[in-house]
Image (cartoon, rainbow, N blue to C red; front, top):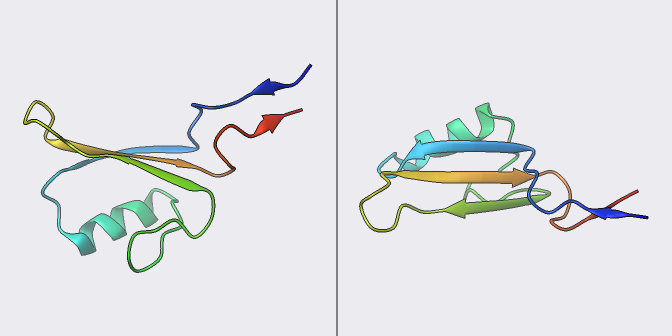
Length: 73
């Protein structure tokens, strides 16, 4: 029977919410996340949880190399 893998990110990265755009792209690339010049994943899926109410001053980036919910054999 096949199992669904939904939440196993290939890379998870936490960055300060006020990091500059160039530094953010550099950090994503250094972590192995393939992003283009605008920060979009070139393949796979990049989920971003932005800091929202002041409790967390970090943005969390989760990159999935395959499709989210991909059936694993």
